[in-house]
Image (cartoon, rainbow, N blue to C red; front, side, top):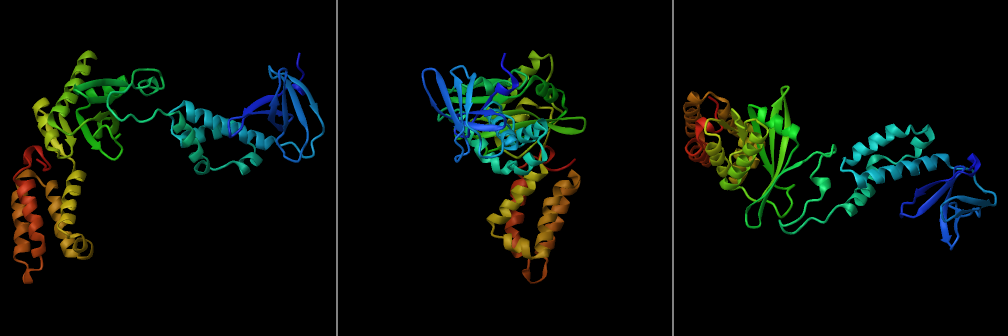
Length: 369
């Protein structure tokens, strides 16, 4: 039986090489022969050596250490090794792994004093994770690793994986629990983001539902474009999934941005649904046009101009029957202003009238009813 004095443990160095630990001293592997592994104290000036057989059973230790043991340094090494293993094997965010391991290790006050902060170690952990991550494909004909198609509970997460057309693929990731929440929600929120999308797709599209008076992300799609047929295909596939679960995907209200293709798909697939535009996207669109008309400086520096622009944006908060009259009153205000001081705003009002008043369906657009 191996005594306590003869027990050794093993770690891995930052360079991936084996390291042995005995009596709170650290040894680096120096060489390996046909029968023995030779380790040398990690302290460069110390000449103590440790020998094991090829099965990592301690044979002997030669010499006396010229320095004190390093229990705190060993704890930090174990901590870092666990962080690295979890970063490689899991998809949990690095800050969360760091916090969980910090709590689990119950480090001493001396260990905490030399513990690297999360922001200091995050770079190397992310690098280790990236080395294990499959290269982002350059075409839509690729295999999805199981780690990305299953939840942490090993349940299906990739629920839709189909080619709409040749080399045009649509993916949707969600769990059964998230789908249930989505299908049972009477109000659905939809939005796409483009900066986070892989280059072989056009956008990351998310659908959110309401439960317990809170908004929850329910499904994440990788869409090839922003066309009506693509959105229709997405909704039809979700309806099919709902039917398989003996549920119905037929929300009462959908809130989204103002994409033409999306609006047409919603009206086609959910004809009885109340489709409303998102106030944030609306004000964002109006402000982008303010920038296009080179009015940003006036908006920032002229309080009267800024107030009129904000009143224009606030029209969407009025009851529908008051929108047209309020718009006309606001337009009349700038037309009758002395010294033509608001003439620079006329192009903005023309844009608002031509698009938001005349093109957007007021009953199914931005404006309240």
